[in-house]
Image (cartoon, rainbow over all chains, first blue to last red):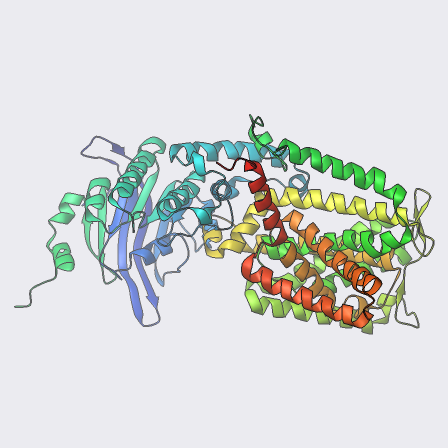
Length: 272
Length: 358
């Protein structure tokens, strides 16, 4: 198991940097239910980190702790070397953490382009006067950020639906637009909550390729939750396995695959 | 066949971002502005201005304001009448306290005062949504009307409890008071409407507008991509109230001249403006205008046709108006929640293809 702050080399020859985010002894309770119990793990810069586990294991809760929705009762979150105070979700976003949702959370009343542009909101600082006149900083910012968004739109191959209202799009494309919105903010850490849920094989292949490309071209650190084991094993550099709120495994896909506790959690244990 | 985007290429993002990307639309807009500013003032008489143009223009500003709050930011408000009253009383106090300063500046300042009041009554929106927020703003409506009725300082201790607009001039023309010429009042309102519409359009297509719409469509996702809900909601309340305040100020000073707050700015006014944006189109600047035009013109039209032409009794015609408006609201809410503006948009889409739809 890797616990050093040094980077490491992946089998396919990518250099992974030091620790970018570290969760230390996180415990999260909802009343009497313990969703997460004393879990620690870290995410290195530039790696694809998967969180897996059966239903109800606490994976999404973990992501919600990272993005500031849930406040853990115990534990500390370190981001880029510094201990993170308890932040509101929008402050977390400003630190450079973007995410997508398990159930698509796009803005249905807006066009694809506007949705992607909302990803740039944390970077737009023009004052209210300038915005109301559409002159000076506001107009300049609009154009600059539009360029960045158009790059993301090109990258994810959604140029043709740029001006379509999101509510008219099919499921697979919505997922892609949501990824585009997260990418538009140029995140340092990208959290993906089941990016491939409900997709067919081709859509999954497309999405996998996009995730790998994002990691490869922008060097974005990615933490993802996924149920498709084939995808997880192929994509991720390291895997955290959770079950009933506890961490039962952590390591490279191969290590995890041969971990007895993980096999028991997924396949069940014989009781004789 | 004129209405085409073929041959219209945007080569910069700036061109692509403009309000009327299609050339035909742009020319039509210029034509409408020319007629409104240079032709209509020479032909209007008192009846047209007082029955149609002034209410239409002033309600347009109010509808724009409410549309920013309800249509763009998704915060339902039933306090429009109250906020209009704030604008009216603010401009009255400013006009009587500083008679030397131009009344147009007072009207803008009255908008600012209303914005502050709007922020105050917008605070509950941080904790409550939907119906509950509607009730909270309803409280604002009743509270504000009560305040202006009960505290004599607001109406300068006048015996009647009314406020009367003193006569004020701008560039030598009488703008407020009984001597105001119809075309002057029309032009003053038109200038305010034009500026308001441009400002509203610019705000709603930029970063601010996107943060409002993000809050409207899904507030949790908006927060996760970095929208500060406090800032987005309160700015929507402030800017919305600013416009509503200006419309209230114009309604009192330029249009009516004398106001009794409970009658003019009661709950009925709040609902009227809300109906305007529902019929016109939630989340559309243009919709605010057609909504206002529709609800101003409908009674005039019904009165002229039913009473003037068919010889019906006035009260029957008035009740028919209620029925028609009520039916339309229900119809629009069920069939076309984006209102007349959406029908207009669909019509344009059809027109783009016409006469060869394939």
